[in-house]
Length: 465
Ligand code: GDP
Ligand code: GDP
Image (cartoon, rainbow, N blue to C red):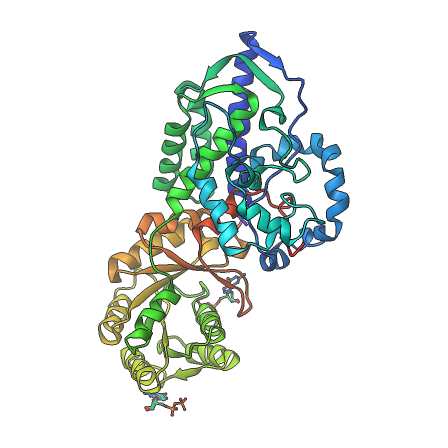
């Protein structure tokens, strides 16, 4: 996922490093460090399932943990160029470096959610759950290794002695606006090309600039570190739209003895019906009883299509004849759920272009009649800016509450995933991750951040190593 965005982020860092080194060379302000190059990589959090599904090429790596681990030192020189950027996010004791909240929150997440899913690089194969517990107890210094350190450099190694990079500036350099001008312009263009919305690209660039200008640089590797952190923080702010999860909302309604009513809108072909099937399956597995309303009475075959998913998943479908009033179908489904004590109503509606006034009016009527608790826009991540644009239009017409982006599994650009929530100020609720019923995941900004700021292919997480 998001390979092209990752490249752009990495390139920004490389360029700035090149620029400052070149300038320092001209000023005779550079000395090569005797210390070795970086020999560690860091990795974002990634669970086993995604690895299996989307990066089967790395799935073999866990078996080779030991050998790779031993070789890591030797191969490090080859990898430095590529992986330098992704190896940051670490908290160091540098005196001109401020603590970074992002790293802390990421560390918390790892500890809270997946204490046993250790990172290949941050933990030795032989080190078992004990080590994990120990790690939990240890404080900042140890935690910071999550992002950055190869496991063999265990706590004995003094931060001061750790490899600082290839060059030191004899007199510290300060990053100026001038240094960043071309680089950030290139980043902005790159983001726009990657279907990131204009306002999001500008926000990222402004934030990175604010963060970096004035930073004092002692060693060339600091540049990568600061750039990594600046980009990560910028993106973190953009993708973190506050909101409750659908599961929390189901629970809240359940406590009142009512079903959560969710109405799905969007254009045809985005994966709306499949998504409804996936959500029915997801919540069925969580122990709830969903019911689906076949309120797309407009399109030929739509009732059969949603019927097919309902049957496959094993949930009740409420349907009328083709051409009947979709609002009535939605209403009946809500009544059915109330009568039967079902916790979730999923209303399929006809796909429509945001420009089709009749269908947009019909959609408003469904909303008026069925009184959904949530109106969810389903968009296709692969359509990039179009998805963001459609979401804005639907939001203006009907006031949507959240977004589901489908086909994120196939999305190398990541433009819609990065932009859509920020542009309409509504959270992404789920990401569609494939064609099967299980291929859906609740959106989690920290997970997303780790997808964007970990180098795929070198990122290995194994269960219970
Ligand atoms: P609808 O017209 O919006 O209801 O679209 P469908 O639900 O029929 O989906 C259209 C196509 O997209 C189907 O072939 C789905 O299997 C596929 N699809 C839906 N969601 C995803 C997803 O998350 N990932 C991938 N790769 N394909 C998906
Ligand atoms: P189940 O046995 O739990 O699947 O539910 P039933 O089929 O017995 O229906 C329960 C309630 O939902 C009944 O009161 C029906 O009025 C309503 N219902 C079920 N299917 C439909 C349908 O296709 N259309 C409408 N309007 N109501 C339905």
